[in-house]
Image (tube, rainbow, N blue to C red):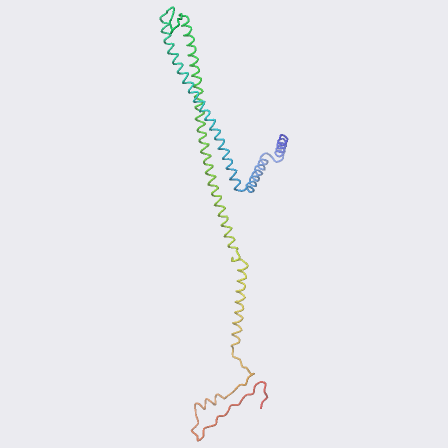
Length: 286
């Protein structure tokens, strides 16, 4: 590890000397961005969401440990408060007892009967002085413990506030992850719909499919064939003379004259003249 650290430091120094600090820093940031982009592209979305959930779970465990520490501080503060209260009660009891002893000493008696014992003035006075020292120590203890209690209460308040803020932030992140997962799912659905739409557009029955092109080409060929058939039919119905058959010819002018100017009545009806037959193209003339 130390060897690699030395190599990195040496390379960094060389890069700074060759390219300058600003350019080297720009290269490093660009490389970092490229690496991050590469990691993002190669990391599945589901894996990234699972990683975030693990991070949230880890932070939740840290918050629990932190709250345990705050609870421990709260316990110490409560114990300190109880100790201060007990010491205060003892101090009050001693102060009351000292007030009685002072009343006894004010009488200046040679001997004092306390309970079943008898004590001299000096003994009572010494006991009173010892109790005074004990009261002073209790007062100092109460003062020190009160200062400690104040700091503990302050730490507990700050810890509780920090814990609540951490919980709130963690809840926001959890809710944000849920919303992002929903958006990611929606994006997947929309991508699938786009793929389905694209597959339908480019399906075998789509506008640019081979089947569609074949049908249009077939329709074009049918149309061409119909135009040619119509053209042939039109040309075949034109007036033509077929000389391969026997054609009967007759002088129409003569027949019209006969129709308009019939001959006078005769004794015998005229004999109709048979029209001459024109020989066909393949027969010799007679």
